[in-house]
Image (cartoon, rainbow, N blue to C red; front, side):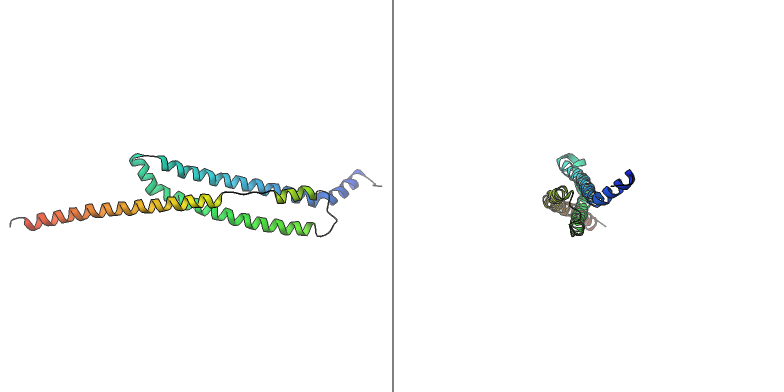
Length: 168
């Protein structure tokens, strides 16, 4: 049937190569998504840990460092979600292209399972937490501004009173 082992191998690879390549591309994409989500999860854990800190250091961290972390987390989630949509659409297109002809059917059940395996990430829950904490930071900054304005207003008022009531 085949003239050599290499010829038989080439035929087999030609028959199943596209399906296997697509299957492993799906697996790499899944792994990349899990890794990216893990980084976002670590960032959200840093944010929630900073909420537990008390004292002056905790207040300073929440006022000055946490806003940057919150922005970074929101940005990463937006980029992650966008990437998930793009990858899902590309995968659907490749799937349709691969199986538009009945020529490639050897590993279709594995590919179908990989395509339909749900990968959900709690993006909306983390974004809700980010929004909530951003609101707290803004209220804290507003309160700080009010306190500083009150102190400065009192100091200026006292200074003016001293200067105006001083005998000449």
